[in-house]
Length: 359
Image 1 (cartoon, helix red, strand yellow):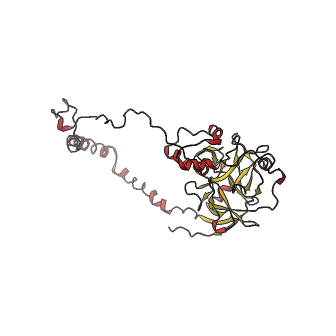
Image 2 (spheres, helix red, strand yellow; image 1 turned 30 degrees about the vertical axis):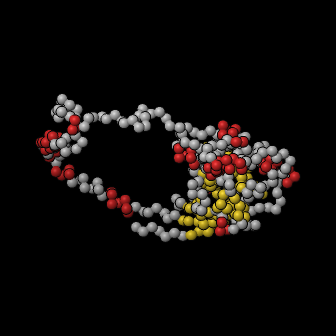
Image 3 (cartoon, rainbow, N blue to C red; image 1 turned 90 degrees about the vertical axis):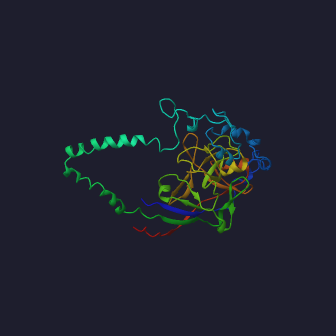
């Protein structure tokens, strides 16, 4: 099966009419992002500040298995040192005394051993070499006829056949873009909160890799080529103001479009390092393997709810935050966060052939 790798730049088609503009400011009492003072406080002191996101941190706790490197990438303090068996600064117990302090070199009187391997193996070679010659050559010649030794050479013959196996099919790079009227693109740059922003410059558009064959069969991850090197997967990140990690009708819950490390397909949100948490210091659940491809719909995102069900979502752009988000109910989202602009991803591929590998 051919492995297709697609380098794609994402572009959005915005309509001039906004969703429910009359409801944009009716009940706005929530914040799409944390207050900026949290970021300012974090820049002044390297510590985890909860602020208004305290309840969300309790809902999405940090796993105890996280290493200090993972905690630092999320802006969290390192783990406190644990009291081990050997305290810092205390010498570890020596398993044996040094030989220069040994008064009785015989092994029966003292457990003293030399560090040099020349003295120990001096005795074994005499015993090891004396036994095998007497037993090994005597048995095989008597029991195994010389003719039976000839079939053994055919065994290495399969090894030269391995290089003659047909080479794997070449990787076909398909470079494409999601472009529509208006020329709006997802930018390679991120805002202050680690969320991908909007651009009208094609040279600044976000370029990604995607396995198109796998994307037709199920959700896959998309790796950014010119995005965040620390968080290379284009991912959906659970929103700061969310009640839970579920998207769908009747709820304003949303997910940022940012970067993270890879998550398995079909998995609900997993708390792990991501661009938003690194900027805001607030752990959130993320999903990277959410992208599907079809000739009719193009590339679409599919969020997995906590019960394992797949949520119907729409990708929108929030101009007031200069960020993209996946939402399950656009009307409910706009009641709380203001107007949005729909973003439709339309894939326009351009196939580039790759020469076959040399044999």
